[in-house]
Length: 149
Image (tube, rainbow, N blue to C red; front, side):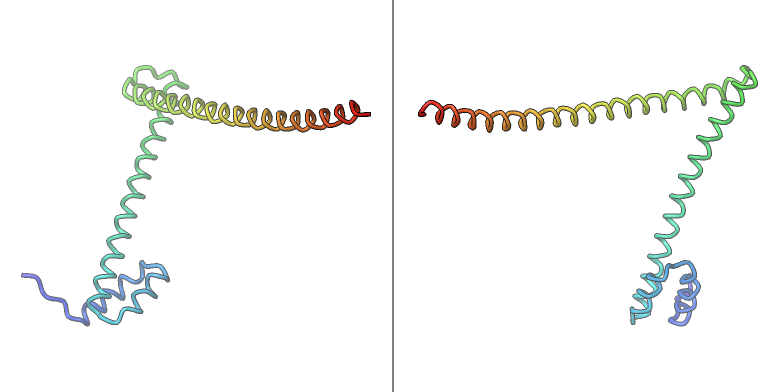
């Protein structure tokens, strides 16, 4: 059976938890008058911190594994260690994945550039047509004036 925490216990726990919080979080907690509500809020902040740290650690581990595969694969290729099939296969898969990403990135970039060029061409065409219409009007007016005289 778990021991029920007293308000004093909760205050001590919150004081320890506050060491991990940002200044804004601590200020927010201090504005809460009800000890139970303050304790629940502090627990929520701790949970968010722990989940965030887990996410950062997980991402760092993924990057570490990926970079280690790259370095090990390059080492195998540079030193002609063709017998380590596992490392070379992992390196190849990694390169294939990045190759596809690079091709997609280039394709997307080219597509966006093509759209920009088409928009610019249409804008210049409209400006040109507007300029031609202006000149046509001026020419018509002058011809009309010259035809009268």
